[in-house]
Image (cartoon, rainbow, N blue to C red; front, side, top):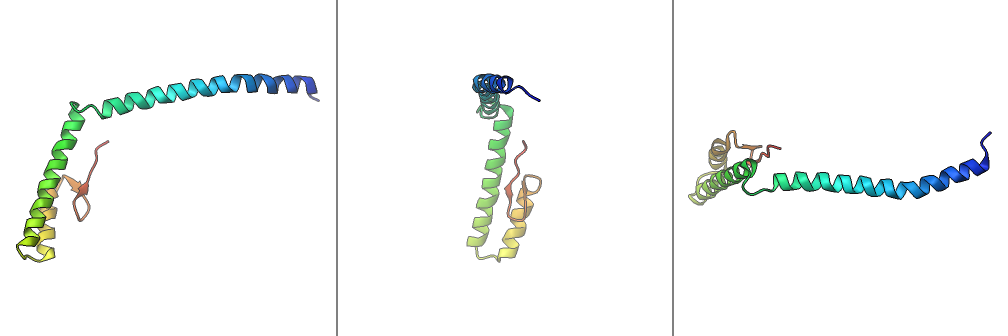
Length: 101
């Protein structure tokens, strides 16, 4: 049988230590996420430059699809042109962004 005084002392010790452990864990997670965020959001990083190029290429493909529709061509024709322009660049039938993370 457990001594009630020992249990009370253990609980008091746990309650005294747990905020410290929680604070340490919070700081460690914060640092980890900050480093990851900084690495991913560096505007001069290779990954960011590649993302920018993909976004521009997709924008051009969508602009082409808009001009195709404006010219009076049927949806199916313009959709096929969009799919061809986005091949290997995006996902799905309507050229959605394919992130490489």
